[in-house]
Amino acid sequence: MLIRLVYTSRSTEMLSPAALEAILGSSRKNNPPNGITGVLCTNGSVFLQMLEGGRREVNETYNRIIKDPRHHDIQLLHFTEVTERKFASWSMGKVSFDRVNMAILLKHSSRAVLDPYSVSGAVSVALLEDLMATANIGS
Ligand code: FAD
Image (cartoon, rainbow, N blue to C red; front, side, top):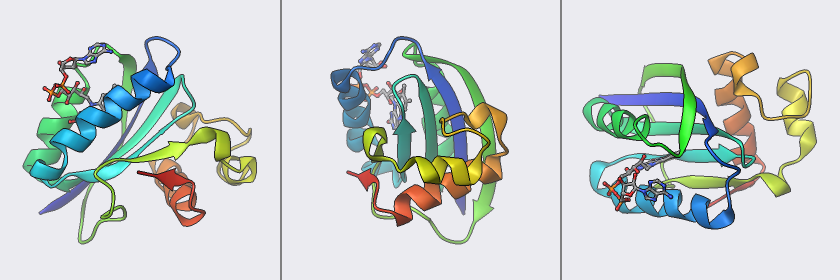
């Protein structure tokens, strides 16, 4: 059974490129053996992450992530059974926010800022899909 989980959180400190790489390094090490794929979007202060995979594996990964002191104010936005993955190609794709077209943010919210706390989970999923469609995601 496949599950899709989306959450948002705030970085404990302004995220440096090295700190982001450390997080992505753990993801790329741990996610493939667990069959987890997904995408991590951040502007340096807010994270928006989608995890896809088996229900047990997604739950175990999420339970590990929420204990991580590198972020806080974690809110689960979306959790659903799915029949197929949206991000099957990425052990953890990274959205390079400096390359994000602000029009994509404006399409989904009242201001051109990443603020998943103020929109529905469905809107955050749609935002991630648009970022993927416009090739703003790298591995
Ligand atoms: P390692 O990756 O080997 O790390 C060793 C230990 O050091 C871990 O306990 C880790 O938490 C800790 N650590 C490393 N760097 C720091 C640091 N700078 N500050 C504080 N502690 C640090 N993990 C995944 O497996 N998959 C994911 O998709 C994933 N996404 C994440 C998204 C976010 C926004 C964050 C903040 C973390 C994410 N992580 C993810 C990391 C996760 O929280 C765990 O740290 C990681 O899974 C632990 O893996 P490990 O036991 O193999 O330890």
